[in-house]
Image (cartoon, rainbow, N blue to C red; front, side, top):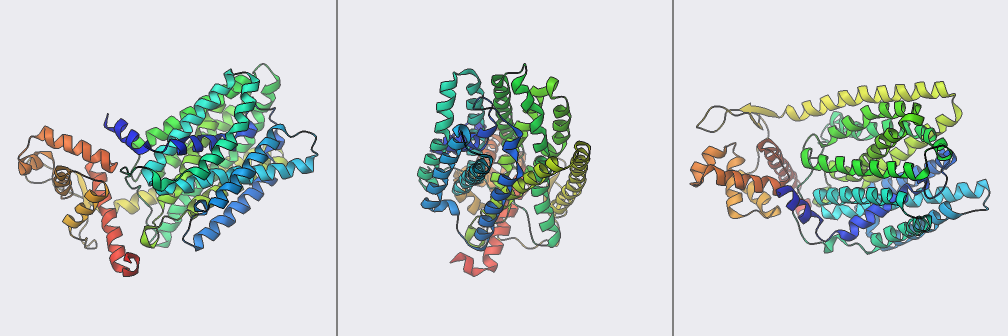
Length: 496
């Protein structure tokens, strides 16, 4: 019940964003919807992907040097929306063009629809990590339901709906104002620490390696295209794609519910890398396992896009709390560039050679990502130790700073900051302060002169507002507040 209320509160006032994100995700994939037109592998030629990666990567590098978001400019949003709409229509219904012109149309389509999704991700930064993640998850589910529904409606309805998608996505992007959304708690997402070169390598590796792994599956696209002319109807394929996207949205929801912690990034690697091998297997038996193939490929692709859109929140904000969108542009550009690479390799290499390259790539990614994951876990475990519980009953195992760690600002001040940011009640602030000192429910109940059940109710409400699921995660959140405050105190200019 608490989670349901928290989700509703997070989505309040974001209906326009949810619809816009859903439409943008569908527009990005409209060229591979079999109910719209016959899909051929030529639509996945590497050239459009190369241009898309170069442009989006260039924009990301420019934003990395400044302190602004491209989506903040109304002209950028409007032009992107217009080009995405026109190029999508030409991809769907353009006839009579020669191959050279179609390549140019697909370049414009890839660049504009990719930018449409990235600009939506950038626009959501103003909502905070948790609310942005909820909007993306809801948009993914909505896009899955709409994709599935297209398999069961007349073709004239399909054509009209697909034609309106880029218009709706662009109009919502132009009109959406995150600063006008009602305030709601938005628990921070644990961020990478980038103090040393090893920490930077771990952070970048954990983000980009799964994207490289996922790009290898572009070669599996050709395995199902022959089914359009066989017993499997386009409507059945469309339904399988829609069901897969719904599953992907559901998995994203589970990640939000159970992995909004230090394990957030690790789940990304654990989900994407192993299932890549399954995608190769199902592609080799597409005639029999085509439905399973779509469930694997399309569900994981939406999970990948979710993590890409969340990358701005995984890296420390700049001075003054500015969340840079450069990681978003960079990770999306890397995904597209890797896709272009493997699409090109698939076109020039013999089938057996390409299969060997793809398998070796996935194995190498799995090995390196495993090492980086261990380093990541060790990096955060190294600054934690196990201590005894508060006076009373036995010992409890909860993390707390090790001896010799940097001195933290006053705990009262930290808890007051957290209380203000998440709009805690006075009693929840009392419970927070005691939990932050490693006390447990029996001692807190005695200290506050209330029952243990009352304390546990306050703890449940407190955890829901903060977006944590245990006392250990709460202590990590307090640690992050302390680190942020210390950084601001060391740099007085950031306070002005």
